[in-house]
Image (cartoon, rainbow, N blue to C red):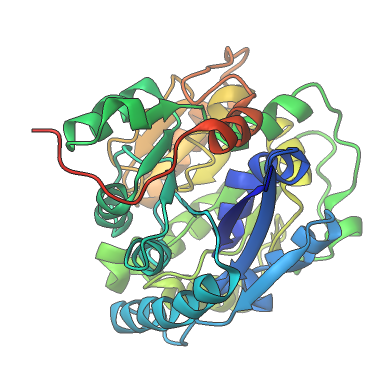
Length: 384
């Protein structure tokens, strides 16, 4: 029996952790052949060069697609997506996959969906049906309407996809593969020194008695405010003085403002308690989170993995607006005083229970089995 060729497109640093265990399960499945395409900011050094970690993990890359235009504004987002559409169309034409997998809701993922569906290739969407702010909200549901098979991360998301007119038999709650990684490291000690292993920029900080982590991205619908928003967080964290590991933002409209705010504050104020990183291996990052006092910012990792790990989160602004969340999250506006108070409150939280709202840590294998057994098609009709 000929193996099904499953083409997975990874376009950004966070998308890799969202799909890593599924990639491994597909690659190891006797009835599947993995075709891995790395594209977008996952190939760029300034955003952490995720491709290096992917290759280090032993995955064979079928194609690389360079598609990111400089500028980090809404116009370059649209042009990046258009360039991605043209390039990915050729990639799929040459690889001739039996199905294409698009991940979640980043702005450029719509290029994957269009390139596959317009060529009559069955499209599988991972992590549809969720709710947030940002351009991600529109892109996610557009991906859903282009997709033929939906592998969602929660019952709430499944219900929403079905309400969008999708066939319930084609909407399956697998849980989120990133929870698989969280489950693997849940009992791990902090087995590495982040500064020694990853370098980064900033002063040596003493983190043995506790530390916090910051990961804050621009909000694409508020990109003109990105510098002011990141400065509010920088000032709050600097004034509190807790040892801090801070991670670079994603490539989105507004990331120039976010990056400029970080650089200018770092050079002018020279904070003694903050060390900055571009990227980490997914497992190392989750171990770092697990042993932190709290996560600050607006990354979905605070909503997903931190819920499972029982890590308090200060969620800033509208980027994760209305996303299903557990009891570990404190929501605040991008205001220095609010952020400071919430950080102090979150650090005092103890013994948070683990939440399984995004799965129990077995999503990768479920996804591979479904891709091997489910009848694939590229034609559908709305159900009402």
